[in-house]
Amino acid sequence: MSGGPLIESLAQFHFLRPWWLLLAAPAFGLWALQRRAADVAARWRRAIDPVLLRHLIVDGGGRRRASPETLLLATWIVGAVAVAGPSWRQAPSPFAQAARPAMFVLKVTPSMLERDLAPTRLDRARQKMSDLLRLREGAPTGLVAYAGSAHLVLPPTSDGAVTNEMAGALAPDLMPRQGDALAQAVTLAAATLKHAGQGGSILIFADAAPALQNAAPGAPVILFAMLPQARAASDPSLAAAASALHARLVATTLDDGDVAELAQILATAGPPPPAPGEGERWEEAGYWLTPLLALMVLFWFRRGWALA
Image (tube, rainbow, N blue to C red):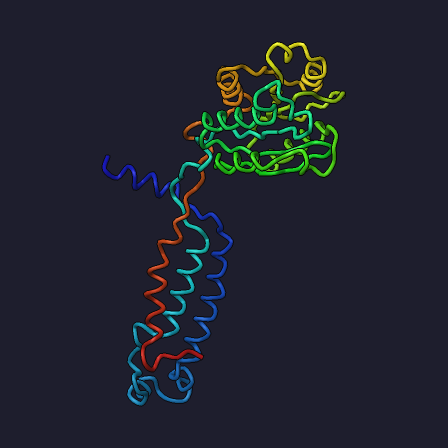
């Protein structure tokens, strides 16, 4: 049926901020008061015969169709309707197809300068991070650095080049305190994800971990061991930390198999992103009334128009 889409749009028509329509009430009141005050004939009807009065008053036979008070009323009502947010269709949410966010937690301590992973453990972590960002191109990724204290370097961003640049500038001598504040770093990463309101996972780049009690942060955690592959699986501190954080432990490989595994884990960990058709929002159409408002304002530049 040809009228189907129109009928459906009318059925879904509503205002996003309907309380702004209450502005129309004082507009009608002021318009009525102005019309009454401007009615010269009303002042004389009780004293002069109406038949005679019509001939004694200039322009007594009627009013201008486009008077200042009528135009002001129309402008006021159109403006109230525009601000009220008329809407009749939905638009997909900008996050409907977004990839799952992640927070990278990078350990920046002197131990990360060991060369059993060439060129150093820290440099290898940066290389793996860069490869992972390339596989997750466009996915929001943030960065936390920690040693004896944890610090938010970058909130989740889809610009992988910025994340790589920030990670490349980190060094142990820049950290204000030496130590291993892994629990604080994970808590900070989880809080950052929660503040962003998108969920996501936490990926830790570390070569060792302190003793932790049950410290599950409420987000999926992956512990990426920055040790030679043979040592990663047998390191007791990393195994204990993975258990305390309810994390999955991933060992470093010489090829890109570890990066591919991490990308797969990050793509499937946590709650799924909104599916197509979900997470939609009502599209506001009030801005379409802006040209009409501009045209109505132009009438106030007519010579002789005034309203007191």
